[in-house]
Length: 614
Image (cartoon, rainbow, N blue to C red; front, top):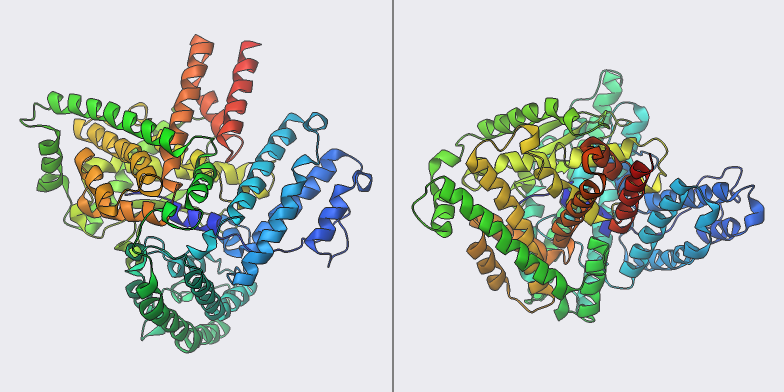
């Protein structure tokens, strides 16, 4: 399985934006302690600003700060350290406040006439409106009761946040300590939130949380120095006084032993003794109150389209049939004796396709990335400045994690981006899928897309601190896999087959996700459909299906986004003919950061028109 930012993390971050806040004042802002309602009232009045551009900028800044303060770990991971000392608020009351704030923000969609804005600001206002609208519509459904699952356990997210924090100066240590002191409250609030969900008859499916208690236990260590929460400060930089550093480390060890571990144990007992017995035994979102409308909202949120579940289901079946045809051509090329099922069995069982040493697998991924790097200027004019590396998936989450994922870096935080490769159960990590995975998770996939967006100098901050528009982000990752031959990969037919295996995986998602959440498929039906149409290891199939059950609609984004990028590429080639430049096309696609597919289409159409007018 794959993905991503991890995708899982990025998806979780997008799903957990909570309580309201206020920004620091400037010349165009109301008093420092004004509520968000007062700030919005101030921005609503044109007479308070010299130009509409200034007023729009004030709105963007308010929104960005609001999002950061509601989910501070988002800023940490993406390199904005304004609120590194805070956690998000996950109490039921926090979500209620968030809902009221979003209602007020939603009303700003008609405040500006795009004719009064520059083309760039008009585009940014479109992105802002879609971002706020999506969050507002999401808040109308109880998504916040479904925030814990075994694919991306919320507590793993807490640990990853701590591991993403900069440790370079005294202030960083104080921020780290403040967050450590807040973990117990976050867990207690989350328990209260999940309990309220149970009381209202809304819970995760049992199969999506059955492993969570064991995962919580894996974060509890007798020796605090072995804790995932201690790792970031185990080796302090020389710039921090050694004696003070040792004292700080002792404080953190005490916090782990006396507060964090007991809080994790309490939450473990709640999940094991209270939540699991009452977790629902159904799978689809349609089985929950107002489930059909809820799933339609999830489709719109993740695909940024108006496609229906039935339409997506049919697109998925067509794509599965097409890709199967291409796979059969490769089987014929290899002169394999047997049908596609026999070939898939051969790929899954033959030892030649697997490593026996985790270090060998990591080395192979690093070698693939080194082969890709020098070829990238052939296809891209804009290149990210921030480097990336290849790391092993942490042991505490490896069993239920995907085959690979990307974790964004931060130039401001002094942290490179990382492509994480899973070495758990090496018999489920085939060599023939590694090139496609590298293209998707590292370069020119998520590292390019996320880092270029971070490095855009004139982009509003809100576009860098909100994780929405999954179809663009994941669509780009899947599209990046199609660039392998142009980047010197896929010279081996098995790697080409591996790329098709990855692509059919995403096509199957369209069928299975809609099958589970709209058409009443069982978990077993979904697994069997997967087995019948792919050569993916059974372990990964099970993890994938459980992911679709846990995150309705998210898996639809990949193929829907990729198909839109391919459609736009084909349109540009047809209209521009010999004047089509792949480097320019890619720069246009990535040059506005993460956007809804409708905005992406407008950007490409404007570029095509500009090329034709030259």
